[in-house]
Length: 164
Image (cartoon, rainbow, N blue to C red; front, side, top):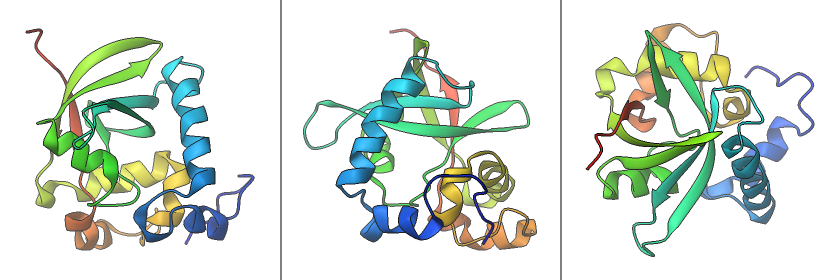
């Protein structure tokens, strides 16, 4: 597994923050902070805040995420895999979300078929260093290794939603 370089937290610490596929109290505090920072547009374009209606509460939930760019489109990938909270909420909302980065955009997330995910997952790990400790493939691995885990890591293409 590749090292995060000058990242202030170790890979083991980052993995422990998300043990069992859910963020602990520290991870939730960091998520609230980064959601505000990314939503305000204080980081480069690839860092955004995803807002989606909670599937159980009906309230808006916010998630700070890094996007992967691939062949002219932007994608969101869950670093914790198939069963993370934002993925379940997006599926329940039929893909309708809001993405914030300086401004608010109504979008639809379209799930990419499993057999098309490998290059997107590779690009995601190349551009979102905080995800590397959570994905069991090295970012420099061949596409075949990404294809082997593609069913466990959904990728969502971001499309501008039509105005109702």
